[in-house]
Length: 124
Image (tube, rainbow, N blue to C red; front, side, top):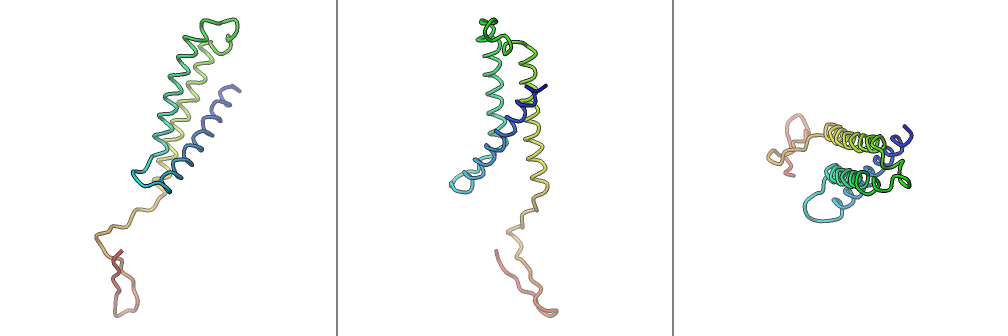
């Protein structure tokens, strides 16, 4: 259980790092925006495939040296940590999008009530 929690916490720390890096990139670079959640999910899927290859191909040949890492139980714990971290990242993105206010439509001008007799229309 400790290995699962360590794997989960390290994956969530990686999520925060990827989100910060994508936010900084989107703020300072021109071009299309990069979604940090998608980058994180792709990174973890690649890590999962790499972990499976290491566990069942490389570490399986050296049971005496890497026995604790090559067991199926250890791989299942790591796979669950990968999956749970991906789910947390998508839930985080969903909650962040729901809490963000709706964008103002560019078609309608902003109306400011200046007095009971007039209204100012400001194009944005």
